[in-house]
Image (cartoon, rainbow, N blue to C red):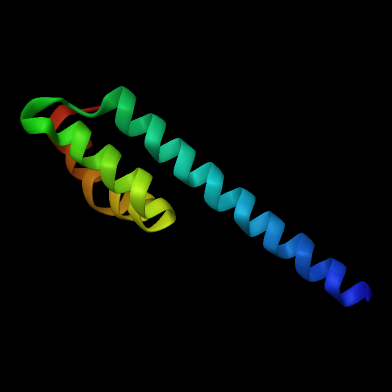
Length: 72
């Protein structure tokens, strides 16, 4: 059974990292995203309901665009 313990530890670590990424992107969106055109609301809904996929989409698509537009 020692192999099963390692699997649980690995999955726990992956879950923790994905949760931290999700929480970080959600906080980033809530604090720095503009409310112009309901952009913040839409991205919060996407991040909350699609969990890690929404977090990756926000991080890869919207965040660089926001930094370029708003400088933050």
